[in-house]
Amino acid sequence: MAMEEATATAFGFPAEVRPGATRVGWIGIGVMSGAMAARLLAAGFAVTAYARTPAKAGALVAAGARLADSPASVAAASDVVFTMVGNPGDVRSVVLDAASGALAGLRPGGVLVDCTSSSPSLAREVAAAARAAGCHAVDCPVSGGDVGARDGTLALLAGGDEAVVAWLAPLFAHLGRPTYMGPPGSGQSSKIANQIAVAGAVVGLGESLAFAGAAGLDERLFLGAVSKGAAGSRVMDIFGERALSRDFSSGGSVRYIIKDLGMALEVGDGQEEEVNVLPGSALYRQMFSAMAANGDGELCLQGLITVVERLNGIMRK
Image (cartoon, rainbow, N blue to C red; front, side, top):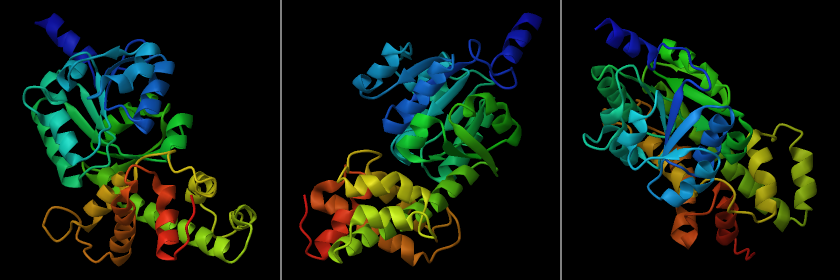
């Protein structure tokens, strides 16, 4: 019995997090999540991954990761399991499914870290389910785009038990800068608020570049000039040159911000925050939805300029 207790204590929280000892699971391999998992692998952490499309994990496997056949199998081989999937329904499936979900395979003491942009109420539900299983859950969506994921400079917005968030610091250090936002669901509420700000900045960027071009300005010269003033922003740094170069494929799909803004607007149903008049968010979502309606739903945020151009009869390739 004493040996069993010692083994349980050495597993997961609060055992020391260190490369070569702490085993990491990663569920969901996309542009950002693949880069994040690769950084942990390069830092010396053993990584076990799951992807619904196994080919997406090819680069990770080539770098030394192990591929599992289900979220539960990932969790069974891990102390800390990161999830980064498409939407709240996917989170529910890969975490809470009684047969194949990560929580079904995670031993007591294990820690779930959901980096998906998801629902605050679902984050609270996952935290409660993890607690009932003797595990821990942190909702930790990220901001910083594919560049931040590649360079390890993401903003990590963490909700959950503060002690568990602090314990994860050796892992978070390879991904970016973590900020403890509050109890379960706080990370997701922070990400939704972040996406409102990002969406507004992207719409402003697209409209300003379209206006500058129609006025006969050198758009690249204009962008370089205003980026040093009050209009300058991280959004402009990441997406400005991509928009000018008509590079609409770098980054995450626009359908994700449509989803995130939809969560911001899903208020008044007793589930989420009580600010229920967000006219800007409604407009931004409509504009990004127009991209999808135009057949450009898989393009990235900087492609929003094409909507502005279409509205003004500007035809560009």
